[in-house]
Length: 454
Ligand code: GDP
Image (cartoon, rainbow, N blue to C red; front, side, top):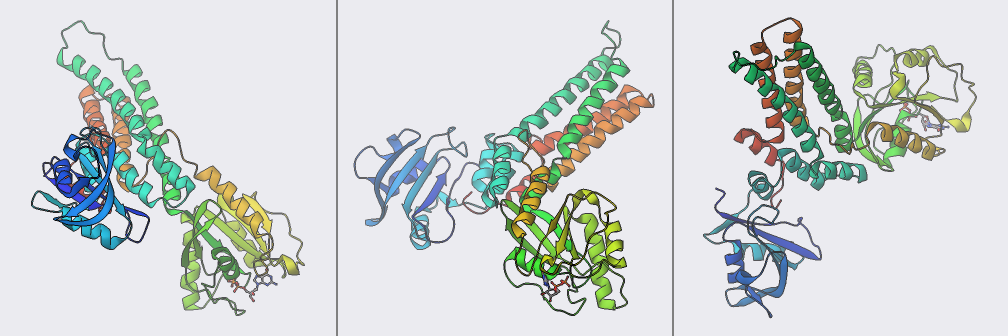
């Protein structure tokens, strides 16, 4: 399958200044020579890598467009193969016409992600880097972009390779010692081994902890707005998301369910949920909403807890305060335009406290700043790599438990064989993570996320 030559439109659907049709494989340049007629200069077959030429795209005898042809020669291309890129005038119709005319019995349409898959199979990218390409394409903010860039640059791969390297060294010490018991080799000291494994375990765990950073950057901070009925949760939700979305009424308990919205505050993506108030109720429908909103507190990255300054602080407010985890709660005192309430001392130190008027848009920028500051602490791209998705997390968790088991086996005085088995499993999980030892099925899943042309 790697031998054939593929082609696809590499630019997004829609009208733009330029569209690019990309060909990759052994026939790419030969085919380019058949369809491209240079205005002056060499035929594509004689063009050096990293050069381009201006000319006509020919469909038999007919000129379809004037285009720029860029040639990349294997292995110095994105895929590692010969690549020809035809930049034509933008517009889906023209690009498709050119693509159709490029396709022939030796050139077939590329499948989603197939260019990047070839890059992976030709050793140009690790699997974690390939995944980062998909993330780059769908990056939704400056931070997410920075993060995908870090991964694309191979920081994660390097960090994981260092783990593999250390594991393999330990495994080879153990193997030598087990295989040549009669030789006068220095014994593998169990305390030294245990120390090495503990250090490795810590390093692996700290990489694992970056998973939340990646998730937040990719999906946004999971943010819930809580508070008793009528404090202005829906009004705040609408003010933040910029348009009427959840129902705002004067009757307590009208926000019955969790509504979700993805919004951007400054450079922070928020996945914002507007929940029913946290309070005791007999109403069945309302009850479901309340239960869900309490459940959503534990799953949230950030909680905006809303209190009403225009009315006295009640028992319900107090109950809510007690349920809030301070380290991820911003207290929002709403209706500052009708403020009467003097707040009593808080039982904890929240992330921040902001007085606003959601209805009049007062002090919302301060709230935005507080959210940004919170996000900066929880979702800053780690320059030395991070775990970007569920697949990577599962592999790394397997590796972590392999090392933890090995430590346990050592502590309990088991033979080194038992230690070796656990460490082997850990090493295998790491190789799967980087794609150095991986099944076709995993590769298929990774590349199924891609669009055609990438
Ligand atoms: P929820 O039940 O917590 O979602 O509360 P709503 O958003 O439905 O708001 C309840 C009532 O408070 C509505 O009449 C809003 O217009 C009003 N309200 C919301 N924010 C403010 C505010 O900042 N000042 C004043 N005066 N009223 C507000």
